[in-house]
Image (cartoon, rainbow, N blue to C red; front, side):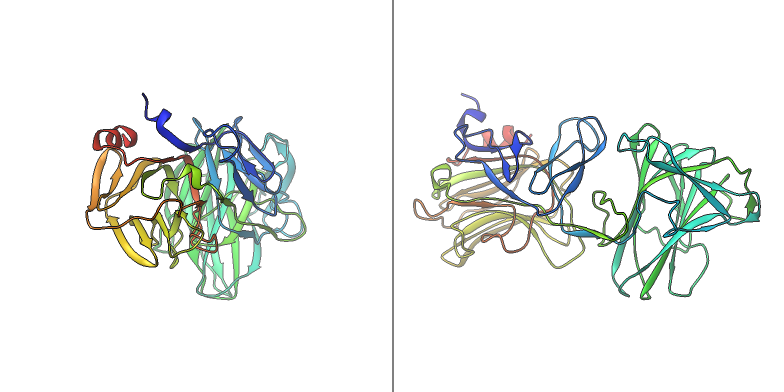
Length: 415
């Protein structure tokens, strides 16, 4: 008998339709999860293209290639207008021109623009100014590809200040050269195929407006120069959002656009959960935002009084906790590194709790109680009543077992 044959509930990036993510186990539909997101959203599809999905459709995301994940993200707003139309007057041009729709973008459509420095001796950039809140973290992202010039510098200019402050990228080899102004901005550059890269970084403003300058250079030397009027860099999909990390692309035209959060839940499944013993297994990764909230996946009675959950904390820790009748029974924390696509198993049984991570038992509790039969019947990618601590990340698979597996089984499951 295999471990998979013993699971009572299995969710993977599998079949779906509007408002529903099908469970692989059971196959009778009793485990199909409810999906809510009242807006459209984007994902990377099986063809490695940035594509849009309709409201309430779960996002099966293939970012990075290989097997997909279920993507869940917080609500975000793209503050830039005309995010793909850099020739629009919303984007100011300094010693630059923009050639519209000049090559195929990461969406697979010929709608990427070319930013071309002119022949005057100057800094060459396009920019957009947006209203922001001072002291708040913002994240910038854009897709870029070399078109004769390789070096892209993004200036972040707050209020009336000036100067080159921001990260410098080399599009010939996909590297971050460094950041000006003494701050690394948590900058990243990621290949998305066909010589395109998505760059992103985060920063904190100190004014009520921020200006983003997209600068081009023929070399890594930051100085004025004269362009040749033909060489430049392809651009597509600019995004500025309030938050400490960049999320999936949100297209805009004449106004800002908000993507609602992804919410996934399932109630009425007491027949798939054993309240007296079992295992919750997760494979995936979380997107941790710098805030006061933990990110939970919970099994409960629909109330926080009777629940167990595993969580990623805002401080980067990981843990597994349970409450019976409102009383904390176990809180097993792990200070090690939870890698992307780690495999985690949370075992519960009367006086026999354990947390396993990537083939190793990392914590136990031998004095914790469990629930009476039939108590637990709800699974949320959030807290017990689905009202907060939403899980944001990528889910490869989620399983529920109705028995407390042996150590040998748990090691095999999480390895």
